[in-house]
Image: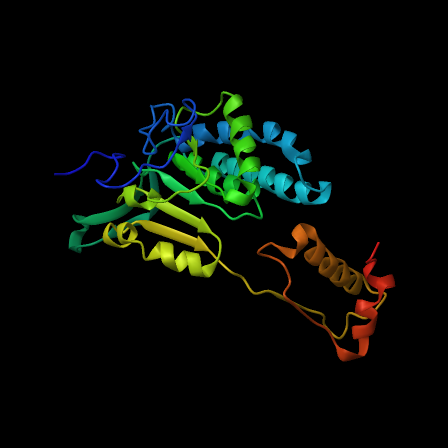
Length: 293
């Protein structure tokens, strides 16, 4: 017997859900958006841009101002960037052609072309603890523009901030019901419900990414899975960037930023700094780094 989309698999526990339609348990994760929710890409660009002003209100929530600005302002920026890109580059339609028409036979009687249309499922978005605002927004924006509802699963440690983010966005009244949904706490069994029309976006450790990618539902149903996992970054100072040059000052300033913003807990953090031995002391000198303040 084939289960209906969104129905729990026998023996599994449905995850708690909070949707734009109401309080927890009010809606199903696999929401079929009304026509307004699956409108043309171009028409969705303005609603994607509009919540950015409301999001600005959480810059002062439980973080240093510097860390909050980095997270919140970054999230607002990516939201506006996607909205602008959609308005400029996407048609006011629900179908997007990809590439030119390709001849597949002699005489031009048999041709083919790729057509892109919105998925009929849900975008499951699993986010890391260190960016509770930027992380969800950079996943929500392209999904919303594509006409796919977002099911946001924040890391439990910082879920309160993501919850406030969702509240502010929903309170604008600009999002179609079901287009933005939130799951906090344990998400045990969440991936049991995904199907061929769904997709999973994950940010976190490489170990967890491997486990999720090997989930039976992901494998057996060929679910689209994208992971942003552990990163290893270095910064190299060239020998011509001597103390007193703009390049030297920029290098040192960036090292300090990468070590202090978010306590170094971000994907772009510099793990190793390579500098010429002759000027290593100048790089680490407090007068150069300005640290400690």
